[in-house]
Image (cartoon, rainbow, N blue to C red; front, top):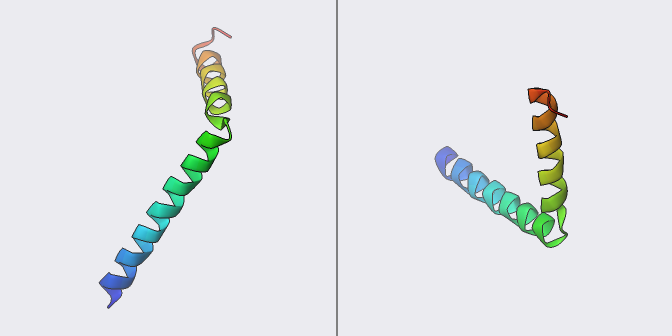
Length: 48
């Protein structure tokens, strides 16, 4: 029973994560995240 509950929980969390990613992509947040990641990398390297 414990293994079954854990499996169901993992699947539910996976579905929720995929759903959040899809909603974020539909709202156009991919560009925002990419821009922030580029700025962060440039700062770490010392270019920006």
